[in-house]
Image (cartoon, rainbow, N blue to C red; front, top):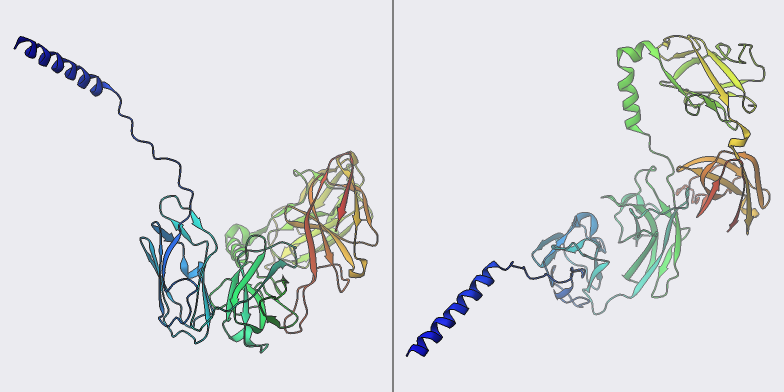
Length: 467
């Protein structure tokens, strides 16, 4: 009996000790495993994906996890385009699409969700997801693709759409919604699938509600002829353009607002193009930028002088077409001090206002050693297309030079990073010209292959450019 009691007491002691040790130990939560990087997966569709002889206008897509859909009105493309916008809703793991008008007979439909579907937890995107069905006995197998390039810059714009019209009338683009729509990716590429074979007119427009060419400031592109769709249609390239640029309403409103203040009503202000406020570039004119449009610029009251205030001959002064920028042109010599005298009444705006007071600008020109020389060697230039060299800095066109040979040289060029482009100047006027759909005139083309040029000060900079 004593042995049993002793054994029970010993066991109880050991159990209590283990309990105390366990209670004192830190509690470690279980690990959650690797991060989920897998996008949602379609597990069921009613009707099934690629189904034929579909008659019902409602579609339910079920995924393997909880999902979200981003702005379906903008991101989901349905082709052929319904007259009424379908209702698209999502709840938990399901997306429901309900057509509000009758489905066309013997027609293949695609619902292109693009990259709008993602999972709730990690935001993993289901990319380029498309659901397809047919109201006839087969899925259409026509398709084609290609690329859209902005003709003026040679760049791409993924916000644009490529659209197809079955109505071959030239006025359809002005009055009708398109039959088919495709998005453009970041590389400027697009692709149509499951198209009904036949002839179409193809265009490029912004992704806006009407999808019609009702404004000549819209970015637009067209092909020179209709395109025949089959299961082996060759790729095409669109060159998009704006026939007319939009006016900056914000800037105009800002100027009006400024002109309504008492101070701005009484006097004109100006700024200059001087570098750091005191240095003049050897290669450009000195510019005086006025805050408002001028009615009068009296060039006799703007005088360029030496340091002894002796007037200098050979100076040309003019006002640009906007009537806000006065340019002082002169054959600048390096490392030279100048004085520019601007009389109080040298400029007058449309309200008769003048400067608050006269001013004298003290500045000096840069040294030649602050510049670098530039040599560009081209290969495979097509001179029959009248190439024009465009030099770009900070997305602004700095210079356009018609090319007559394979080598471009300049003794002095301001240091910095530049982009080189080639304009094929069809009409030889030295500038890029937009297209015109009514006249069936395509825009002039600019090649931008991301040719970069770095110019270092006091250095001979040479770059080879292969087209």
